[in-house]
Amino acid sequence: MALEATIEPGHTWSSGDDVDVDTLNKTLQLARAVVPTPIAVKHGGTGGSTAQAAQKSVQALGRLEGWVEYTDDGVAVSLGVLPADSFVIDVVVHVTTAFNGAGAKEIEVGWSSDADALGVAFDVSSTGVGYPTVGANDGYNSTQQNVEVLFTDTGGTATAGKVIVLIYFAQVTSEP
Image (cartoon, rainbow, N blue to C red; front, side, top):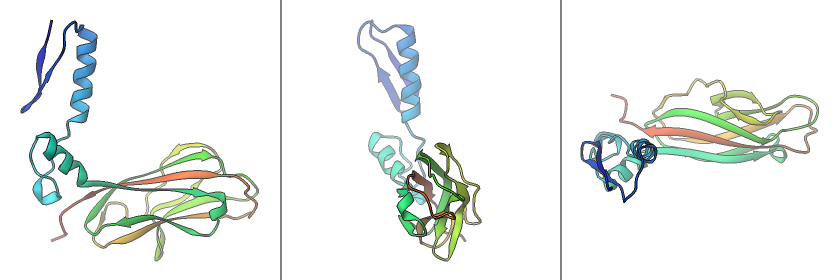
């Protein structure tokens, strides 16, 4: 039996033959998850709900990311440019290899004039996903900034360590 369902106004889903209830429910949940809410034109989206409009709306959101290793001690690693009129939604780190050695092992996320503007000192001596305490510039940023991650090894003895840092942001209207 073939089924058809309305996911959201303007969006439909059709199945093939032999669909059971569990498969239908899982598919509908997935479909709802991938159909984004339209982003207004003034925020860089189209305001529409077609597939092409959804893709344009997703482009209004952004991310910066990059890897930092133990050899980057004291070196500002660039993640890219945070555009003017952006709203930083989240800063996430995933330590895939723990930074070893004596002394504190920390990263800060920010820019050259404010090393912890987005994330204050975060311990990277153990593996896992974490969320640094937000810095003073978390949220709205009116000016363009080159986002950097600074790894500091106070003992100067690390021989291993690797972390990926992700910054999620959205383009927003200029401050009035």
